[in-house]
Image 1: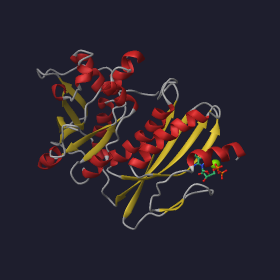
Image 2: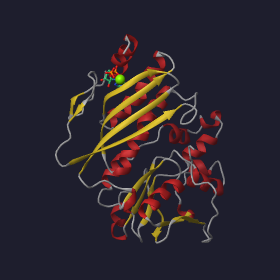
Image 3: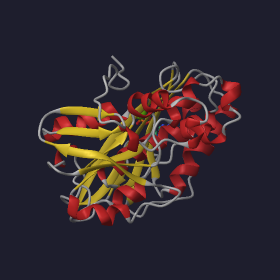
Image 4: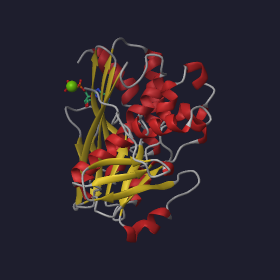
Length: 316
Ligand code: ADP
Ligand code: MG
């Protein structure tokens, strides 16, 4: 490690106020030491953000810092886990103090809000890329899996779908005038609290990162069942419907990406409890049912099956 790297770590990444109670040893040694309490399981997940793929060169460092952690928190939410610790692998083209400061504001404000501690990482030089690994905890056996959906379950989603995909399609000057869509794209809110509250109620869960069709498809594949989605029930925001017609809004909701809402399946006898979690600021919307079969089928308001070509964003 060079002095440059050492100074970057000291100045920007070793300044956290928040200390998670289970950290025996954080940043500074060759590895962190973390104490997992008896009866808890450790969940580990990682997401990488690459310039030009996951964010634009014009995005602010603050937004990139925020989102690099938000997408990881969202994976913990989808498991019903409580996030605890994070590590950060940062590849930077140059030492840019203003960029690093902005990144840290976005990253650590969200870390603090969710009471997660940065316990280590790696800092190297190269094309801009940010990898965050997140570690979460859950009482043994209680995680929400993709494989848990059952025939007859209701399919629900949190929030509204398609906002981020719509935002991506707008010219930047127009987007700047739509705070709600801009926030959906740059400041997705990970549904951690809701994920934890869904333990024991939802039979399966996933976060919608690559579009509902693709992600619900993963759940159905893992569960060996079919999803039937009533598109008229898809929760669409006023902000999207003000800009595009319904067919385009459905397309964004089904095949867009970057929503970071939860999609869950819920047995009939648990539906009321889950719907009681719904609020005006975060609705839980039933959009369909799970049946025998395989795949995801979508219907319009007349019950006609939709022909769908794109099943969400694929990297390869
Ligand atoms: P080593 O050479 O032993 O791999 P490093 O120089 O990579 O050690 O890192 C020194 C310490 O700083 C380690 O505790 C490491 O986890 C931490 N660290 C390095 N980069 C980051 C970063 N971007 N964010 C948080 N911690 C970091
Ligand atoms: Mg290292």
